[in-house]
Image 1 (cartoon, rainbow, N blue to C red):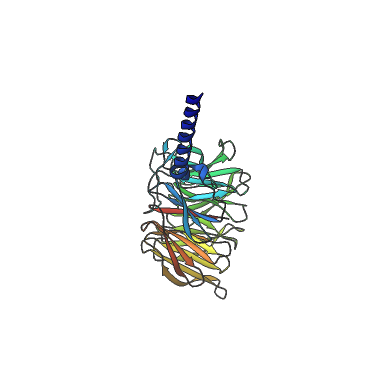
Image 2 (cartoon, helix red, strand yellow):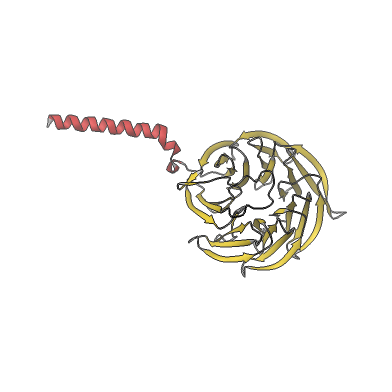
Length: 353
């Protein structure tokens, strides 16, 4: 009995030592140890295949999710990110698109990663038949939409619960981003090879209009003012689409290749990144002339790309692909107040409250 008691004591000591060691060194890296229950910005780092989490209350990088070896599969060059409730959807084209978004690679497949936004775990890894730019939830969260970059461009619509393909929608050549209008009544697909935007009825899954825009359109970015802002990389312009009428109402000449366009509703400003020069330009709406007027420019970081605003519109976050940073910007003063180091080639960013 004495020997048995001694063995039990030794075993207990070893177990406690192992548990103590795990809690100190390993538990922090385990997905179950993460609990993102606070307002945060999620940044997709393309080259390092990670997701950086920025805590909005103090603008610090609080967590980093490593997604490179998701489910045993190698994840290369994750791109843009969208969310619905506590789920994240990340498009994985499999190649670096930081220098430009034109064209896909024949025979190359794409991926969609579905993640738990709170725990940082990958819930589903979906392989798509061809390269994709992004994966976005439908406004009601029941579907996931993604494009297929090919000469015979398509949009695939997945069931968000079963992850089975529900619909295939034919669009233009080499489609890039698919996005939804703020009111959720229309989906927009930028066809880079066609210089057009396909407008889709989300209920019927039918193309209701095809609009001619600039050369090499990448994304139609939604705004609360009933417009969509299309960044045309090759023609260096922004096409403004009226959601209600399906008409291009204005074309803004930039003089630089745009990376992203974002509308700030509270300030009624249009921001466009200039990746080649690491700057952000902004426009004010002129009521008298009924057009956007260039109002200024400020430095962000090398390879300035995606923009997201806080709900009140007072703070902006800009991903800088070449400096591996995120700029925190005071919207009123257009001044960078903080620069955060994240992973390599940060690209897509979203805010989740």
